[in-house]
Image (cartoon, helix red, strand yellow):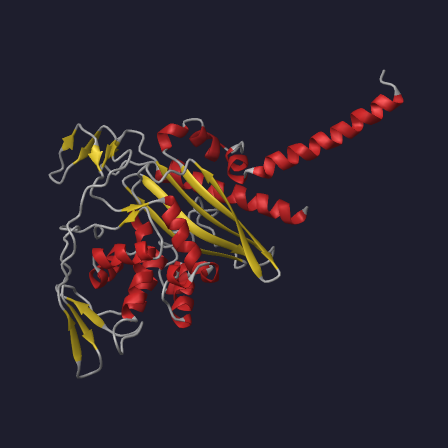
Amino acid sequence: MLSKPISIIFFLLLIISCKEKSKIEFSHPIESALKATSPKIKNVIDSINAYEVQIKFTQIRRENNEVFFTDYDFQTNKNNYFYPASTVKLPVAILALEEINKIPDVSLHTKFYIEGDTIETTVAKEITKIFAVSDNDAYNRLFEFLGQDTINQSLHKKGIENVRISHRLSIDDADNITTKPIVIYMNDSTTRIRERRSNATIKPLVLNNLKKGKGYINEDDELLKEPFDFSFKNYYSIDAQHEVLKRIIFPEKFKKEERFNLSATQRDFLLNAMHTLPREARYDSTEYYDSYVKFFMFGDHQKPIPNTIEIYNKVGYAYGTLTDCAYIRDSTNTIEFLLTATILVNNNQIFNDNTYEYDTIGIPFLAELGRQLYDQELQQKKQ
């Protein structure tokens, strides 16, 4: 039996030990989240190398009208390539807003028509479609409006590195370096023509993991037993995605030359589009449920997202790669954080066969990751 003084010392040490464990548990939120017993996390962590997971998480603290960031990383590496899919639509949407500011008398709602297209549209309509349902045609129209050189040079001038946008999405001749002519309708009787733009030749990327898998289905529907080469595809690293999002949500944290040149009206429109749910944009809620393009926290079910939680994000999914880049805010519990993550789910290692584990592994992992980090922030608030 312990003597009374020793018992007291042991008790004090136990208290200190418990406090230390609590600090360790929350010292790196991502690692704590990945230790969760949920099979949605564990199934991925048990074979972590196969899934090429990269995660970046930013805690946000407000004090005396100032915003402070604390960034955490898990396996993020600008040199390790992953296919960004539709996440590239966010910077293209932002830069389209910048571009119309360069054209006199043109606004969000000015109609334009791209040669060979089937509709007349506006930048506002295309941005709404991009965020509500991740519409590829909408992205391609804005891509024609800009061209590769404008996109890449604009991002690099703002200090956003490790990004190279080279092609349109899901169409033939997607990487054509010449944009199409655009007719801009100034009013009922006046039009303006934007001529074709020639862009620099696309060079192959020099990164790790550009050749993936053990086979792929080619354009002739044949299986080629060799890795799929992503060297000429879009490149948009985790850090670059996070930086673009930060500049939109918190422009005041950046120097003027690092910010996007948007008016207050344009930024408000963009932010509203980013968190608008498909049903709020008049899409059929049966097909386009609330979490259709919001993977974190809610992606693994089709229930309505609570009104108290707003998610400003852009997802991407193609070639077995799922990515989400989001600012999440809970107005009731005053919780807010930034989260960007990617995962590759292609167990058979064959690309273009449409056999990917999006719904069984990828989206459940991202949803649970978001919930784990949200719960940690909630617990911190309650302490």
